[in-house]
Image (spheres, rainbow over the protein chains, first blue to last red):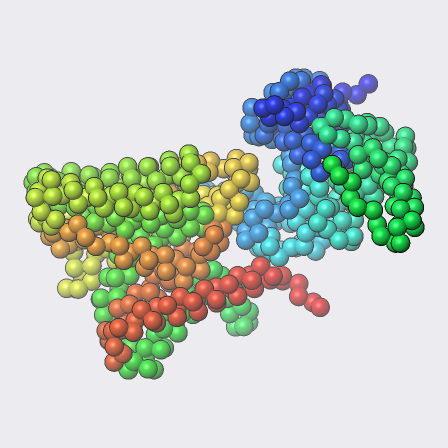
Amino acid sequence: MTTPVLELRNVNKSFGPIDVLHDISLKVNAGEVLCLLGDNGAGKSTLIKTLAGVHKPTSGEIWMDGERVDFGKPKDAADRGIATVHQFGGTFPLMSIGRSFFVGVEPVKKIGPFKIFDRKTANETAVKAVQEFGITRIDDGDRLIGGLSGGERQSLAIARAVHFGARVLILDEPTAALGVKQASHVLRIVLEAKKRGIAVIFITHQVTHAMAVGDHFAVLIRGALAANFMRDEKSREEITDLMAGGEALADLGSEIETYMESHEGHPPPPPAE
Amino acid sequence: MNTFAFGTLLRQPAAGSILSLIAVILFYVLFGGVDLGNLLGAASWVNFAANLGIVALPVGMLMMAGELDISIGAMIPAGSMTIAILSGHYELPIIVGMLGALGLGVVVGLINGFLTVRTSVPSLIITLATLVAMQGIVLSASVLLTGNASVALNAPDWSKALFGQLIGGSFQIIILWWLALTAIFALVVHHTPYGNWLFAMGGDKESARNAGIPTDRMTIMLFVLSATSACFVGMCGAILFNSAQVSGGMNYIFNAVVSVVVGGVLLTGGFGSILGIFFGTLTFAVVNQGIYFTDIDRNWSSLIIGVMLLAAVLMNNTFRTMAVNYSPAKKK
């Protein structure tokens, strides 16, 4: 048995009286893509933040490489190689590619007693790192992040995380705001990261995107793990249904149709909660 | 080749301020009948720019980092009153007065910085509070200790030579301090990791912190820098004019912010340059003081400043968009 890179054991998280995560146990191996599916408010963000060291679990354990870890702050998680890339990737739109790539870890060269930011090295390294991921359109490290497309920003952010030694890559809805072509760029980069032996946790709404790259799927519903299965264990329809909170979307479709037939073409009113 | 260089210039944050400066000088020459040699040789606007510039630089750096410090308006008279009370009224050695003035800047800067970091109150409000509070403290302390709102100071020669000398009879020595500080800050902001941190903080403080940047320490340091710089300007004024007044300094708030914004610093942070602030200050000084060299009535100068501010900011927005959308491979 291989030891999972990252493992959650019975993790609970509550904010005051509100239970947000309930008894979550998950594993992700190196070179594997874990797709975390779930509707809004299912607890995905809380789960990511717990993994990234922003929140401490109320109870339960986090293990890395067969060793129990305790993240007091985001830096601890980052030091262990957990990197989170958020939906809007490039967060400094008015900084150049080279500069933002190295924020916090700027390369310097010494000139006399001064440590000077090494723009040339920064730009070259950044451009090289992105191009290795197949984004060849980025070729000038002086360009500003704001001028990149959404997909390029995501790719840059992922390339950055990998360059700085990420072992677990958490992608928070990387394709949500992207068009079809851009999204396929990002998915290709996810596969590239996987090929390099990185454990990827891919959070998404879109089943198509999840099916394209995922090896392992976990569905969160109201803070609990509703399903946890490997690729090929379930069909696309089953996954879609699971994501919709366990209700069968297919059934819903026929229900609406029957309703409309009997109500002169009006759709049914939304269910009262 | 020339057009290429021009394009590169336009994408710099300083572009708007340089063009503004040229436009203002042209305007004065064409419509105000200014003798250009006369204007360029005059000390008044250079002195004005230097005093303003020393405050505008750190205010601009704070703005790049996404913060604002308006307490400088009270720190300038606070600095000059401190040195005048300590070394003038109590006749302590001038060095004590100088350290007192700069020390006060450090203390108020620390207060501003800590409050900004520890609370979620915007720094504009925090420094507004310290601005008003410091005015009260300076006035009451002055009246309480000396019985007067204006204190005389007789600085020894060496301190005059360093901080309060008139070069060539009319150019204040503080001009050299301004130039030196501009060079130092330009180096730090654009060519060291600290500068990178500054822009990252202004772009997104949360991400900057997650990237391991000591954002709290940087913020506090910047506030200390701006309050101390303001005290430094006040101190130099007291040494030069042999006296200090409680009032004055409030104009510096708006003047500094206008200079910084004309200089291409983005009000919300994350973008700007030291060179831009430098030229923004120069432009402001030429408008403000250069009007005396024209046939235009002095009262119009505020109108010109208003128009210039708007024009410069519009230009800056355009240039910033150009910079963002610029890509070297423009083959369509």
